[in-house]
Length: 105
Image 1 (cartoon, one colour):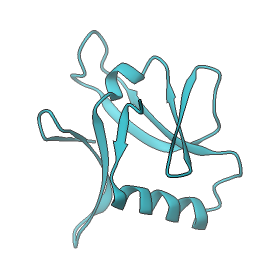
Image 2 (cartoon, helix red, strand yellow):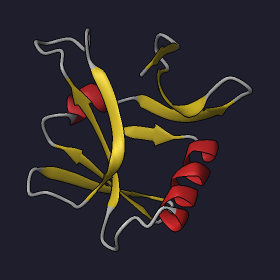
Image 3 (cartoon, one colour):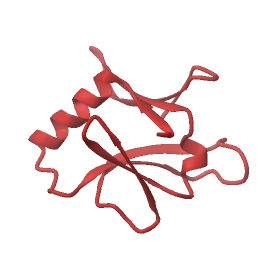
Image 4 (cartoon, helix red, strand yellow):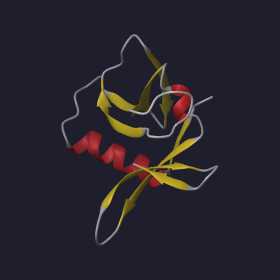
């Protein structure tokens, strides 16, 4: 089971970045959390970037894109969805918790 979902729009943008921004060979999409702590996701900041796999990672594949999540982050990522929004004012990736429909950055 893959703990995080990535929308079609987000996958398209990730592939675009990987092809056009000189992401090194062997790198994949890293999904993780920063900050917070304790037993809840309160105060968590979700992060997305490109990185090499690490020993502490769980590795998944979504549409031929390697996805790396640190084993200690998996419990905070389960059920989250990464979406990509593009509008007149802003564009970027957004984490959505479908249980609360809350947008998290």
